[in-house]
Image (cartoon, rainbow, N blue to C red):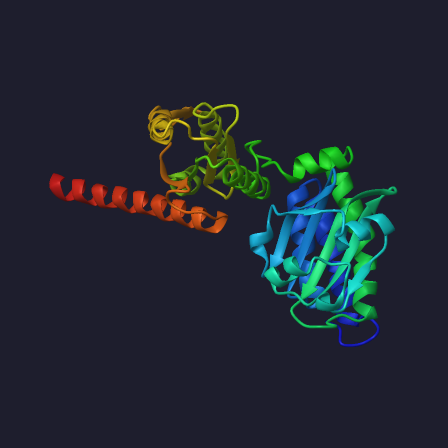
Length: 342
């Protein structure tokens, strides 16, 4: 927080540096959004910053900096929300105390632990794309100078996001939800779909499975041949993974070498085992790239709802633990085989 009515020289210099950094990122929309949230948090001195994109009658969280990383992919109804009102009025809105503000969703604020927030509309050529939101755990955390800084940044941010897509809001939303390299869903859209799948499963009382898949040998490939070859392996692995799922299932790249699959409606309890076997089978053939014979190996963890866990966080944690267990067992087997050979 600036602690005074007007922006400081240091803050203004940071804004200029941020503008330059955004320009250098060019058409990488997700990198632009990540840069914006991180720098907004730093410049204003906020506990966190969020970018929400407009989709139909909802706002979807697509970039998070700070303490609310669990909100990534979260959906907020435009109606009766400060974000929606900000889009409607096309002006910055400030809630100095969320416990005493009828415009905000108090339960959502309590869940994150915020007590004051500012919401900035991201509008380009009179077309609203979403909002930038900064928040604090303290009451009355921001002053007029902080809001002026946000207004100064908002037009450039909106223009950069708009031009990163080169097409408009529909293309912007597609690019914000897609991994550029593999053309699979990215982490934010995966979490969005995951929450939707969980809500439907709870309503219909059916099971579903979550797979967390980590590539075992990507780092050695990157180290030996470079990231261009590593990227080719990632694309090939994504292509192979698409072959093991049904049309109603969902696949995403959620990290550098990490993928996720949601198997919806497990009417057949053996389906998850069948898919695991298929994943193992698709990894067996070597990937030939520029006369290089490359191994594609992975470790997989599975969580079944509601058998293993019942919430997004618990299911992710359970699948992660199973994946790391699989990875450890493979390492132990490898060491054991070497000792036996000796």
